[in-house]
Image (cartoon, rainbow, N blue to C red; front, side, top):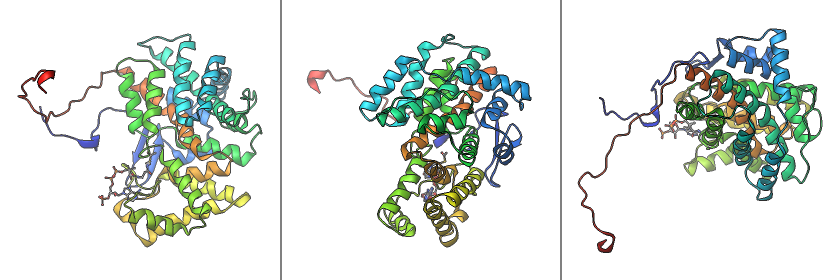
Length: 381
Ligand code: ACO
């Protein structure tokens, strides 16, 4: 047995998957063989969910049935709303509210049990995906001192989320931009949060545990947390009337990394960032343009003037998502939970796929500590 240590599991392949293909050198991302560009342009997030879970794009009838099932499951039990209310009272981060809310749903699930078979795991997954937007929107309203809104019967997942959040039906460009953002974040190979979810499910724990763990892993600034950091950077630049380049130089001289830049797999601009940049530009055309301007100034400076892309450091998905969400009126600390609301689909799809030939994930660590310590009683220490 080799005792070579693979720090960060760089380049270590631990499973086979047919869900997403990533070409980090050429900036390509496919879900089940379909380009992310086509899916973002032509499919709804609901179609993408069906594709990830079932392996193929739905027919019209299949999509209607799937969408109806999701719509039926969107409301929250009262005690989950009360849990969210108590978290709002102590000003918990929305990511904490989401993680706690998903966990609090489990006792209400009629299929709740360990060792779920595929059908049970799929039902649990659908219920969680249906309710995550409701949890987040309810939490946002509760912390603003407002009561949660019931889901809108006629809106799709993306538009309904924006409606439940703001109380207003989004316009076409807002609804489409948000739907695309959900599609773009749905799956991305064995990233840290997906791996976490799969590790949990490999013990035959249920989907609630897997998703709760995934939310925890996604919250960190090296992973999903970067989208909030990007927006906070832009807000700081704006509030202090700074030149964005001045902000970047100050951060770099303090040895800080620029949020939304760099990726373990992509060595060129993330294809998701390309699409979100386009949405950000469109929203800037009909609203405020400064957020888009700050981001492009930073990107041009880092890539063209400093040549960071030559070292494989380019904008990732988090770089432009913040300015899209901000222009839709969503506060910055909701961005990572929105990422989770979408990526939960990838977590669940990978759990379903992995469980087809489940094997407990149990790596090793190389022991580097003492081996011959003599026990000293507490009185003599
Ligand atoms: N700004 C400036 N320099 C950077 C950045 C950045 N954002 N990212 C990496 N680098 C530099 C590092 O300082 C390092 O340089 P060095 O070798 O001279 O020390 C080199 O690039 C390699 O960095 P690593 O940390 O080894 O690369 P890794 O693959 O672990 O990094 C990561 C990936 C963690 C995402 C990193 O790029 C980063 O911290 N980015 C900022 C946070 C961020 O945007 N996270 C979101 C990622 S996308 C997602 O999870 C959805």
